[in-house]
Image (cartoon, rainbow, N blue to C red; front, side, top):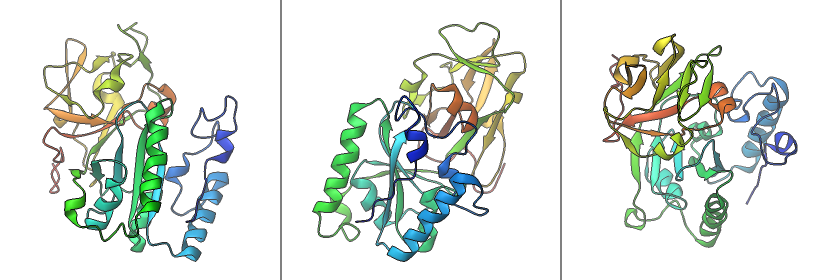
Length: 275
């Protein structure tokens, strides 16, 4: 077993284990591709060098979600080996063709790789799951060759990524103050992996409208009309969706994304053929 701890510097900022990246720093899980710039790029490059030397049979990238919610796994490859790894931790697997420079893209080196999102950093069950999944992996003589009957994983394909414009503002309140471009309720995280129907409001939009949001698919298709709509100042899904990675941390919402979403059926919102 080889253990690599990448986020040591931000973890040591008081209060400990409270932020995912250094102030003005980069998200380490976006740095596993060239050019390997800055402190985070150097760490990513060093981790990849260790992996090349170790030649592991598989790679588990285990960390917390940006908000409270059930555990899930993410991969760029959906096959038996990746589903077997996922089943050690969860029965939800997100398969995406979008490339962001994440560690899970190491799967392209023919090493089965999954990202395991254990749950929020304040969720005790997330810590327990991280530990128990590791115990399951180390306790089994074989993992990648498990028969399919040994695991039952639901696969959601190619979610769209909804991002907030860099200059936009966001608040988490029960009612909008009129000062923010986007307002979500404080309990928006409870929507994670639930189905949101077209008649259920997600939040409130400001005077700038949907222009502050961008919907990015795996093939870089952008068509916000298929994802969200506005009615009487509120935001609604344009169709029934299943959303995840929703956070109430405004820093993460702005620096990373607001949420990911697929159709309620688990199929991509944008087809492989584009708009």
